[in-house]
Length: 301
Image (cartoon, rainbow, N blue to C red):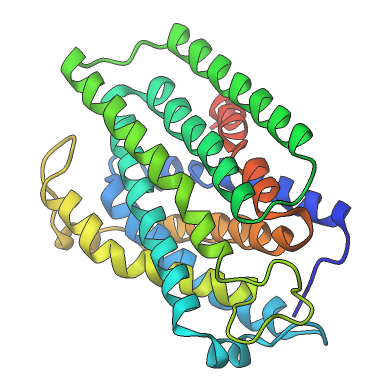
């Protein structure tokens, strides 16, 4: 499988992660303004799973280092598989809650709060689980990213006032906090199932980054039948929507949604791959600079 052998390459992959995590949301806009987010999200999840398989049978199955995808999957311990599956479930819950908070409190309030909280807590949790890198530089970088996210939120709030009652805003803020707390944990469950110290010859029973992204995507898909179905029946904003509406979408609409999932999956896979050299905390922290990328895209899309 493809393995990163130096720190500089790992950092480059982390930057690509940040670009991917900050860019996938554009596909929702490209899918169409009348296409409900709950329907878009199904395509997003399917795209994530399909692209994870492409990565597993290409980068995850070439070269002499590590374990090929199918071999790695066959030897994986149930504990490792369960940990990554749980990470996928936690991520899916947090992602849906964050989207709901944006619809209630507005992008300028909910996104910086949810992602900022996930960044701070996530870096602490991941560094405690796998301490790697200079903690002073790491946490100084976290502070700078948080300042940038807060400034972006303040600027967005001044440019555009989101409509809605104060009760809606309070509910949105509460959901954003809950989403941020949940999101801070998902990466640690995935990292705990991988041998971050030796991707070249992983410990038996543990997963490679490629098997991890596939199992993670399976966890997201399975939990989506529960979480997204509930949101479709009882949406935070708007009227309920049924599965029949999903099949009324055009092929282009579905493909654009799948593209969004593929972009997110690519970024996440690179984050897992980079974690071996950069460390889980650094890999996660750099990726969570995504709101700044999304803000730049917002000017053009």
